[in-house]
Image 1: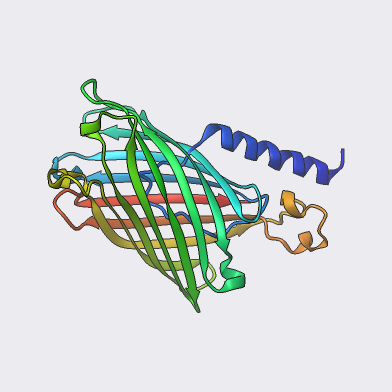
Image 2: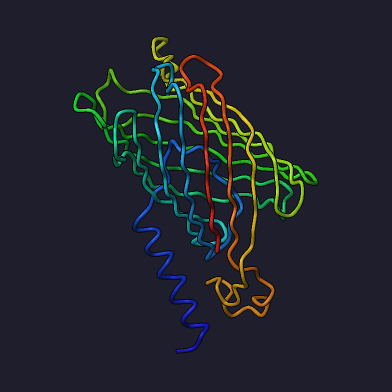
Length: 274
């Protein structure tokens, strides 16, 4: 078996296992991005620590895994799972699962502005006996723009509760934004913000509306040479110029802007793209 065939098999196997094992968690503090291509696989890990969890005087620790696969240059699938550990608990509990699909409408490199559509469904598992599992549907758009060394990105999703009692259902919006400055090839600094308005219909649902914002540090690194590693380009002579694994780590400190949000949220993440 040739070396190129072995690499092709390895990548296809990795993509298949990733899609089977992981989902993107709806509560993750990360933006959905519009930049992807056919055959591209991206694995993301994120850890979150919140202090004074929404005025409850407790902390919460979450870990989430996500896998994304570029089916075509305009279609990407995302799947994954989430775990959480609350105060006075000694282990992580399986907390959430989600699957989503993303369509690229405008390519930033070609049109100068990136735009895409997103749709996903998630299920959050109750951690207490007196609570019920929650299912949530989200649909919306992804936008991004590069200006010299600056990168601007935003997500806006309509969210709705499904499969719940009528008096417990909600509908609202979820937003995410990022302003990033690329200092050099490996280091970038930015500001990220996340929030949600969980229910427009019931003023008493204010406790569900959370808004946080803060600085984030990004570190990029490339490893090796992926000659022949991209499934979509195995027979392309330009493969020799392709980079190997691309790693990006993130460290952020975000602050709540209302009483219902956690006072402090520390986020750490690692993205591997190949």
